[in-house]
Length: 178
Image (cartoon, rainbow, N blue to C red; front, side, top):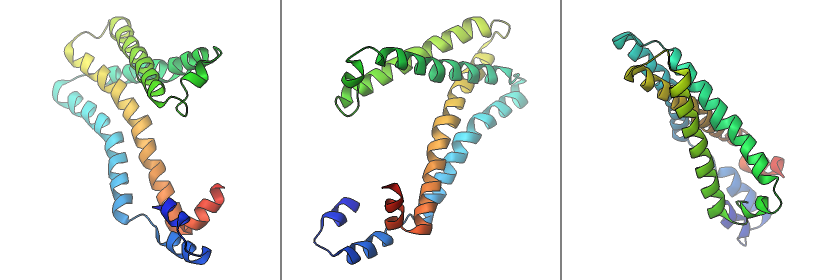
């Protein structure tokens, strides 16, 4: 690992040579491209298939995506700002100080807000679109939007970082980070 190389008794020159040999394989980049395309295309292709085979209107997908954005991102951010403005809670839920409590708070708050968003969306926004098919497309909209926003961006970031490190070398990359 990088830490082992840095802590070893090798000279700086030897360490730099070893650090520049640490590169990301083409397979790693290709796998990340594949996964990012999967995160983006799978929800869209599913809605297209349902529209083509069952005549479902894709509007429910966009309603689900809007409720995902509203509750899983906007409302969660507002709740975090409000909760962490209470003295002492920021350090208590800090991942550095208490990683377990931080993960528990994040999972519960996001899970509760996402479920409330799905409930409100299905109960009120989908009132004019009854049926299992539309409810399914609404759920694919919520999950698909999250997949596109969270999943694809992580993989795309990995691709960019891997290509950058491969092009300039890991030593230069770590110098730029410092």
